[in-house]
Length: 399
Ligand code: AMP
Image (cartoon, rainbow, N blue to C red; front, side):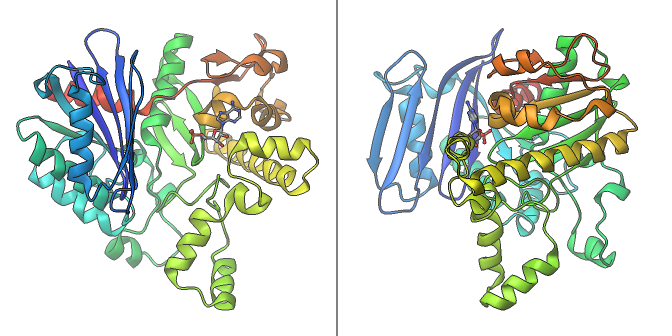
């Protein structure tokens, strides 16, 4: 049974086709970029076959999806004989608001709710809806499922999601903490417990999803009880290009000084900030580390700020959970950057962490225990797979 996983952005469509028969197998993946711009790019990577790249104008999402479906069934680059071999489509949806605490089969009511959330996620949800409607047009008989970044965090108690502003803004405008990366936090916590033979409902876990976007979640007995991202994914940790927690007074001051509109402020805090903004070098941790090694002070400072923030959140969430049994690192940085993990875990002895630096040095892109056998608190690096979560949820709902 093949599941097509889609992540539709405003000018891009990322996709994976997975065979979910016994052990999930990736058949193909790729991306359509620069939709609506003068020149679009389509990159298709079929497993075991040559990569296919096409550059041409791709006016809208229907054209983009058309390219993907043709590539998947192409004689040379294809991986399936016909579109009938696609059992269902799973969509990554950034914002489900307070409507969705689980993945759902998409119908008219679900679409209306995703649309209602567009107001609070204007950069993401309209594009997701476009993707859903495109698939309805191109593959009208194939069921579609929505998997939300926010749903895992719907278990946050009000004390963790209410902001310190007049309550009417929550009641009338739905302004509250939602949290994101939910599929990843849930997936790595469950995977780690499976590896350790633990019952997740008895454990306190802190998951650190450290990628270009980064967030930390406190998980108590399998449920998210606090998370660092907020109303939008710009809050919490300092990230690649996002600022993370920032005094609203500082932002207003900058806006006054520079005559910025709210759109300018969105650009500043989402695209020009984070470790990129601090270093002036890059948002990529490999480039930052090379620059820091070469003596670049601001690159080193950016890395220090990042690691300090992660550590601070771990301390806060250990307090929230009244202790911690397991700290998990995932995401591109969490899975690969041993220096970041080392910096974060140095000085966590008060939490019962005994970190194995030698094991940590060699752990890249693997599932591994990074704490010593004597450590009271476990530390692990776990590879995440958000597409697999989407495919699994889709299969389960459609079956
Ligand atoms: P993600 O958004 O999860 O794909 O993560 C992207 C981030 O992971 C970028 O900052 C990359 O520099 C970082 N990253 C990926 N691979 C490595 C690596 N081998 N060492 C250090 N950082 C890495």
